[in-house]
Image (cartoon, rainbow, N blue to C red; front, side, top):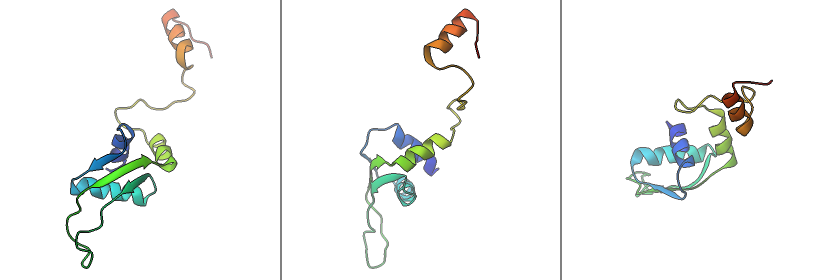
Length: 102
C-alpha cells in the first residue's frame, strides 16, 4: 500500500500535501524507510502523543525511493525485459518491416 503511494507520488507534482489519516500514515512509513523527504505533523497533544494530525507534505522522492520504484513492477505496467527487443526506432522499424535481428 505504501508502494502504491510512492508510485502516486512519482507521477505527481511535488511538493504534495495529504490530509487523510491513512495517507499521512503511508507518508510516515515512506519517510521512515528513507524513500521520501517529507514534513509530517507532530501529534496535536504532545504530552499524550495523540490527536489528529492536520497534514503531511512530501517534498521529494529520494534516490533510494526511485530505486525501489524501479525494482517493483506494477500490474498496469509492462514487465521490464532489457534484452527482449531493440530500443527505440530500430524496434519500430523492424516491426514495420517484419524482420528482427539479434
